[in-house]
Each structure stands twice: as structure tokens, then as C-alpha cells.
Amino acid sequence: MNKHPCPCGSGHPYLSCCGRFIDQGLLPETAEQLMRSRYTAFTQANAAYLLASWHPSTRPESLDLQSDAPVKWLGLRIDKVEAGAAPDNQGRVCFVARSRQGSGPAQRLEECSRFEREQERWFYVDGDVRT
Image 1 (cartoon, rainbow, N blue to C red):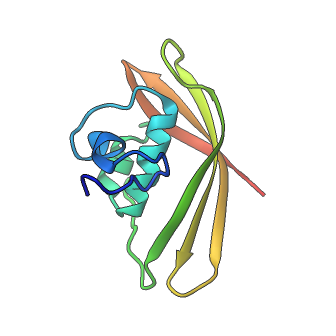
Image 2: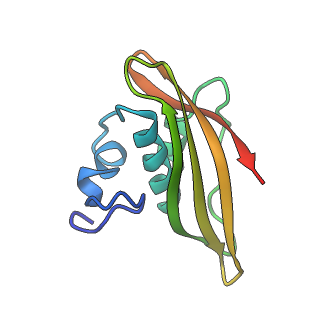
Image 3: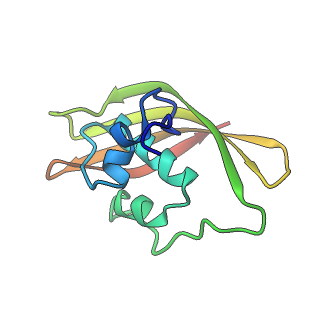
């Protein structure tokens, strides 16, 4: 996956984009980087990364990303970024993520996600789904 484009849609190779956070353990420097890496982790069904990047106050005990009809992630579009870079301790990222479960129709998730930075580390807190 080193020369393949990152699933997050940045146009950068995976290893120099989200792979450095997911596979190499580096910490995202901005809320947007965390958002993109979390989307990429969803494309990989990487529950461990998703849980580790979730704020402890809202983190579920577990995530079940396996289903009878696997989810294929089709793309991510970032619509708006509010704050979310040092010295900020909070940020919002509004996005549209498209997916398809099994052979079903394509679906869209539109959300404005909230992020918090604690001790130099960004966490996903929660999000408002847009309809």
C-alpha cells in the first residue's frame, strides 16, 4: 500500500498520509488529519485504531465492524473545517462519507464531528449527523 493513494481522498500515498498514523503510530497534528485517518481506519475495519482515537468520555466499549454484508467505503469529502490545529484544543470537521453495504444501494453519511486535543493528542468526541 506504500504507493497506493490514501483512501481518505487526500491524493497522497497511504504511507505518507493516514498510514503514518494508523501503521506507524504517529499522532495526527490536526483534527482534519484525525478525521481522515479515522475514515481510512473504517475502510480497513480497524476497530483498534478507531477506539484508540475516540475520546474516553464518549468511547464505546467495543466496535463490531464485521457484518454479513461487508461495507465498501466509496469516498470521503471534507466540506468544512473549523479550528482544530494547535494551539486550538477543539475543532469541528464536516464531511460526507459514501459507502455501500453488500450489493445494496450507495449510502451517504453527512456529519459534523467534534474533536478535542488533550496533552497534544487529538480525539474524536462525537458528531451531529446532517439530514
